[in-house]
Length: 483
Ligand code: SAM
Ligand code: SF4
Image (cartoon, rainbow, N blue to C red; front, side, top):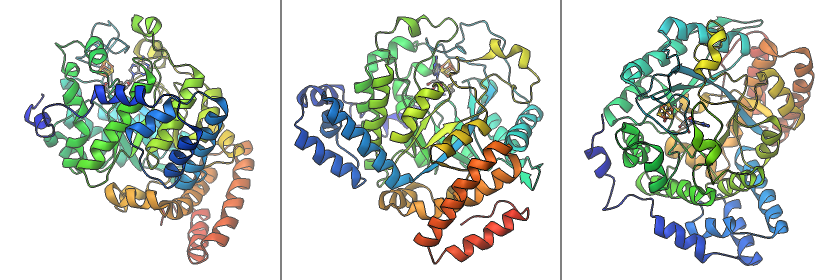
């Protein structure tokens, strides 16, 4: 149910997506001087959010050598805030019943696909495979919008997942953070999710362009209300959910406009919530889906080169935010994009309903929302990331220790968050290597962990003895120890 008062209370006369301001900034910052670009890059390096003119200037760069400098600086900013840590997760599709009719989505109500909502027992089976066999510690649960998957169901799925504990080779496996990707909710409902231990609340605006939004989401559906969606993160923060994730479905409208939309969203959140901006920004690209002719007919398809550019500009414009690239993308694209901006990626991904526990595997095709570009296992992805120099972090300590909202923003902006995170990355990666890694992955994993321990000894001498004490406990089978 849309509560109009929970939209209007946040607005002046118009919403914060000022299309003429965005168009003017894009038109007024054409052919930026190299010197100006260099100054903007310095501002990003100081981990300051860029304004719309600065973002537009980056988006308007034409010269290849300046783009190279942008990519390089994006990588430096990422390193400064997140170092060489990368977080992995898996999506868990819980229900594909949906009352909406989004033109691009396989779950739209017009599609006569087989619909399924997992029972809590079935959710438990899925969680057992994800936590006990694959080795995930983080999930994002995904739901269509429907009375069958209302907030009580969502809360029930979270409670069920958190209750699962599976014996592993050397200890036990458990999902420790569940992020939620569902419809925009009211403040009352969001408070229920807060109580259930939600990690990040994710809702993508899909497109910030009002007219395109109206074209793709019929006005007769709930999702047809642009502003109910636009202000759901404001409601989440008011409901006490500190970590909010925004995103755009790239390919529906001009990518430069959409980047400006995301940055405007970050600005409004920062303005209204004492500097708290988005915890994550997701950058899904439109993929083919059943009866979604808008996907093949779009005039706004984002090329791989432009995808790289938009990821880099977002990294620079909202420098503190985590950025999520998903298995919609091919392994090649992920390899290219992760170094310049992304901090989280999914692996072992399946997007059918009930597919992890394989009960419904034969019906997977029929229940898929869109097609995947990368179906490699978590083990394969982790090995590749390790070869690229990344340590996979399964750390979920942040939100359990209250490092969320303005506290996490402060730590991220000052680069201090990394100290705890690196130590927790070492500890959780040790757990994962001992419980789940194949022999080959173990070999590359051990190299990276040895290098990180050495670095911790040099950079954090005061915390180092504690790290070694915890590390030994984990080696002997204890689990879930963190700073
Ligand atoms: N039903 C909720 C909603 O729409 O917000 C949450 C679940 S929906 C399945 C999650 C996201 O999938 C959507 O926000 C959209 O960005 C993405 N999606 C839908 N169709 C897609 C497609 N054809 N290609 C890539 N992503 C798609
Ligand atoms: Fe339903 Fe979400 Fe798909 Fe739209 S994107 S049809 S709301 S599941």
